[in-house]
Length: 64
Image (cartoon, rainbow, N blue to C red; front, top):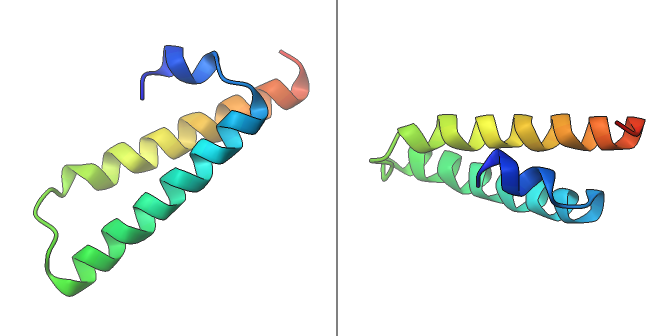
């Protein structure tokens, strides 16, 4: 998801998106462990998006 789209979400929606990303990250790890992972670039994408969501949640909590 684009950063512009993430900025437009409220904290509750960001929290829900974070849960989805964590679930996706878990599934990717399970695929890697089973030897089924072929798209290794997905790990970086998910980690980066989790970091963006957490940053936005923190900044919205501070009121900026």
